Amino acid sequence: MGQKAPTLDGLIARSPDPEATALRYEQLQSDADLRDRTEALPPEGLADLIAVIGISGFLFQYLCSHGSFIDDFRYSPAQDIAREPVSDFTGLRHHKYRELLRLTRLDLSCTDEDLLRRTHGTDDPGRTGA
Image 1 (cartoon, rainbow, N blue to C red):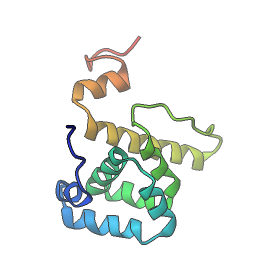
Image 2 (spheres, one colour):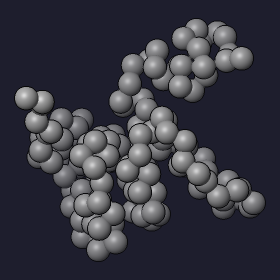
Image 3 (cartoon, rainbow, N blue to C red):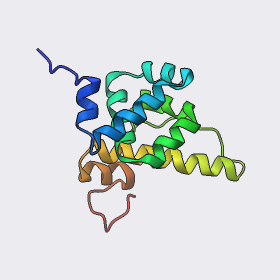
């Protein structure tokens, strides 16, 4: 049999600050739109969401303000997602924060070598991908 997915309580308990993570998750659940988006996540997406809100108060606040970004957790952080073209400073800021969110997820879910390969196309940090 396959491994059983961790429970929500187990995911929160594994975070660096379980108490803060639990409070942040409760805050997400108190907003109907954010709750619906969170409940629609696959198990691995929920695990990534809990990990991210457990380590970054900034990204947590950004997700609360821009709930549609929670939908990105439905996909692997290594998967390219179609984005709107950036046409102004607000769009640029959203793009940067979305990339920060994606890189944070990659950092939490893969080895350093995988992260280098996915972001630079190489295992050698001194070389750039061709």
